[in-house]
Length: 316
Image 1: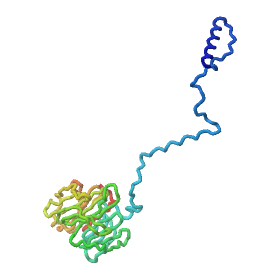
Image 2 (image 1 turned 180 degrees about the vertical axis):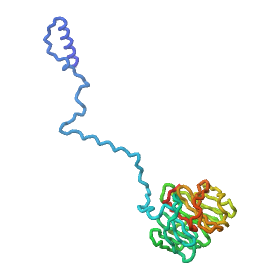
Image 3 (image 1 turned 180 degrees about the horizontal axis):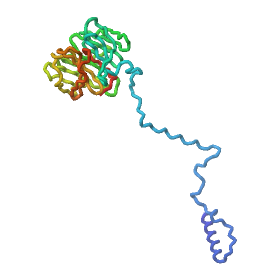
Image 4 (image 1 turned 135 degrees about the vertical axis):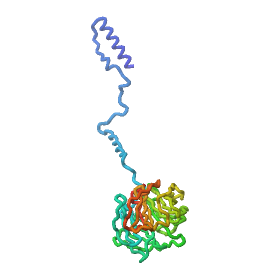
């Protein structure tokens, strides 16, 4: 009602001004208007007790930061094993490193595991252990020691007969690796804690060498008796399925070879082949996963009977 009285008083005063030009109008029309929207704030601020300041905004997310892995590798992972290819000379048991980026070898030391016996195959773990087979016995060599101490693991291959071997990671996203061995008929996983074998798949050949990489790939060089029949085969180590298999038509047949070995590096495969007709060392061939072969070394100067590469090396 106050707003109505104020407006009526103003109108009456204005009417008097218009008619007589004299009006002692002591009413402030603005003060007399009661505007409901201009009322007292609903939540007045007490100057003696001001409200707390708003919380700071969250820090921006760095898009380049990757989450911590759920299963990180050990702190000393790959500190011992080289990322090059270890090769062992059949005639001297000398261990060397082959560098695929320069196609050269450097000396590591001499292994003395089985007296005058000659080594037959080798694999290298990323933890710095080399496993070398002499006939039907398997020895462990500590690569962290300059003297390359050698210990008999106690594993006997027995009815599994002669085998080639190599390491591969379980998948492209893990550092865990596994040792695999292959004879002329089967591929098995070999547990180096219990020394128990688990069959992976059948793979018919006259002789087989294995290798693998950090991309979780397991490869087999399966020699056949007939020339041009040998294959480079990739095996799914979890299902046993053959992922791919290509014929290596440039590869000599089994009876032309003295020794052979295989290692994966940088997405390719490296085959070390010594021929019965030759008087020098092994040839080195780079083989792509599709089977294209290029000879990169005509004579390495040593007779390579085993090649071991850890999964610390560049993968596929």
